[in-house]
Image (cartoon, rainbow, N blue to C red; front, side, top):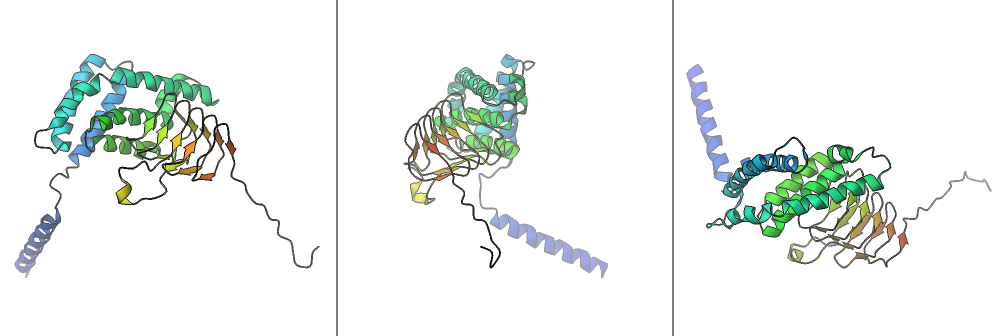
Amino acid sequence: MVNFDIHFSIMDSESIISKINQHKTQPNLRFKLKEKVQLFTDKLFYTLFDIDTPVAENLIVLERLFDELVELGCWEIDKPCKKVWESYVVKLPEVLEKLNLDAQAFVNCDPASSSIEEVYMAYPGFYAIAIYRLAHELYVEGFPLVPRLMTEYAHRQTGVDINPGAQIGKSFFIDHGTGVVIGEAAIIMNDVRIYQGVTLGGLYVAKSLRKTKRHPTIENNVTIYANATILGGKTVIGANSIIGGNAFITSSVPPNSTVYHSSEIKIKTAPNVS
């Protein structure tokens, strides 16, 4: 009886393994890529900001890590992604310059910030912006999947979901961060401030709209308060406008506007009480 049980167990196990293998149909799905992207992202962040991290040595390490990402995540036969590193690395000083402006915007906009070092090390909004800017340059270069994995890594850590395809100008500020969603085709100009729970999304989700501008444009010096939702590729929030908390917007707003979500208050009265 014991031998039969062992034999049955082996046969059952072989059947399960065979069926699982039959349904593993994605030849390029290697989760090692996800782990390598996280390592690359961390190393990149430290290289740009940590004063004790040697830049020259780390750039060599980053290039090696990047080659591994190409092997795992660039599936074209001729591996055109191998050429991306050379054009990407020269952009890092400019990205760092933009991020330093973002960090200063946090200091200027948030009265709770005690130092700029606190912004770099403790503000989830800044971290999300940093990884977005680093991923965006790879997105522009056309490296498949890796920029998305970078911003999703930041999303898991911060609650801020910025698609690497979004276009974001200088001195960008996200306060608190949790629940912020910025879509792939969103355009955000300079000196924009947004708060937790803000969504810059699309009105429609049809796959046929993949190549169209589905997400709104936010012009210079706009403030968008908590939980506001702004939808649509033709929606433009004009410069110097203020969008109040919980506002729901699907059409354009002129420059210098103030938009508030108005709450209706009704006081219940007991029956037969005048």
